[in-house]
Image (tube, rainbow, N blue to C red; front, side):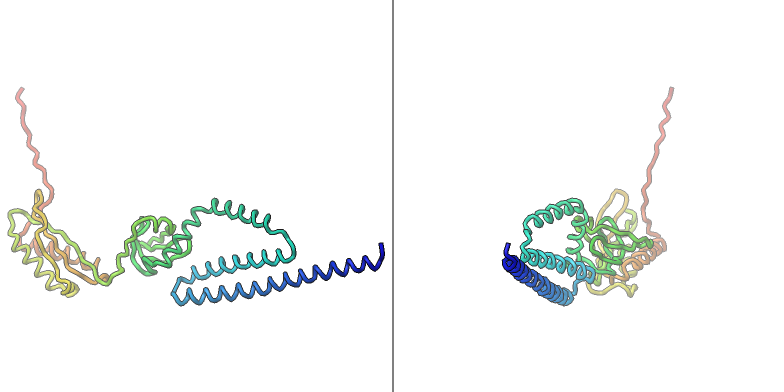
Length: 272
């Protein structure tokens, strides 16, 4: 073979592939720069929307590496690499990983919902996922609660979003529902006056909405009253306990009986 022909082929080969390599490198560098800019823009938008920092970092990584894979595929295609088989492998691997991590992905999706829709925030007292406690942290896969007896409980986010969420202190005021029963032989007007006097002398009870005191039920062994004052959320439990004690003492002092379950047993002697 002619030496000049060989040199010509080598020159053409390197010329063609050097252009491909240069084009591939440019695609990679420019694509990587664009990916970083897009992720930076996404981060600014999420910060503006006051999205949780944990979710921002997680989404940053997902978006960046997804874009980087697209850039690498484009660069490989510029080199003449057949990417269709690679895509098939990536798709099969993604399916396998998705099936293996089904529960984790479900918890992740639930975590995203909790962060975006915000049924509760850190510091709220919540009943969710079978747990009642103060929310200490909301992560991508689970939420951490601190219970009233100082236990730390970690609940999967999927378990929370699949059930009822009760945000106990979402509103600044709450209605305190108390039930007291008195004997049928006692005067209901006297009992009602006692309840009203105690509520009027308690500074933590709100004037608006006004408290309600009403006979709610003529039960089997008692006349039941509903005593329903409105209070600040932070005063709820202390006031519940204090009012229960004050009303019991006041009823005792007035000689009003609070019935308790009783059973009469009659013995019949059978003559033999």
